[in-house]
Length: 344
Image 1 (cartoon, rainbow, N blue to C red):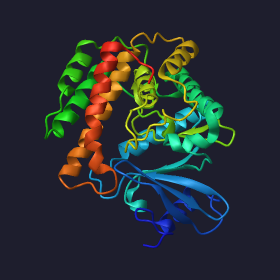
Image 2: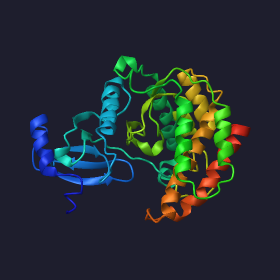
Image 3: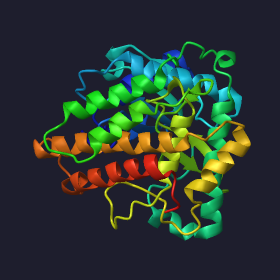
């Protein structure tokens, strides 16, 4: 496979599909490259020399490569595209596994930058950084303002008992990767369970809403929200809690987990919360719970990566230090539950 024929992307078959489904869309032969791949879905850019599109498909050799994930992602993006929530325009969904070996969908290519680290944000300067992060909050408010039933997403999830199910799900994930003693994690899980808040009316939730899952345009505006694989109908404050968590400094130099909180001009957690509350009209008095839950969820995800690393299943830079991060996330979770949101 050369660079123009990345694994998992048969350009001739894709071209044939374009001809059948969207005649005239592609003008010439297609080239393609992998934009990003990992444990989650693979993303490619594909071009005919004049226009560029994006293809999303499940990972290679992934036993659970269900059409379900692709259909869900395509469905939520299709439903939101006419609403003004910034998402790429979806062009086609292909559930025929003959074409690429798995279901996939194609959407427009959106120009923009995903900012992953404080270092990448720094050249923007404090004022532009502040504006970008505040627009992240405003865009989230816009997503949560969409009436799911009005855009055909009334049955996109099961909002009843959402938080309880989430907490149980991540507890099971933790049990599946336990091979060392983690001080405080059971206490964090149990306390979250005891203090479960009452959820507001359900909305579409993104599930992984943070700065590096959006594309920022040259005008510092949000051009598109990406990575909808965790989206469902549920408690909107889970998205806010995650965003607040990512807006808190870890206090670890050179952390293998991306956080932009240390960038000059980055608004503090309190300001993010107050802006969300003012613009959404939602009661955010339980935001400490949602933020602590985000710390817990990330601790579990990181412990899973550390567990696979100890089994020799994960290769690459930085994985040897993921394990050291887990106690930091647990500590932040416990502190947030007991003391509320502290400015970093």
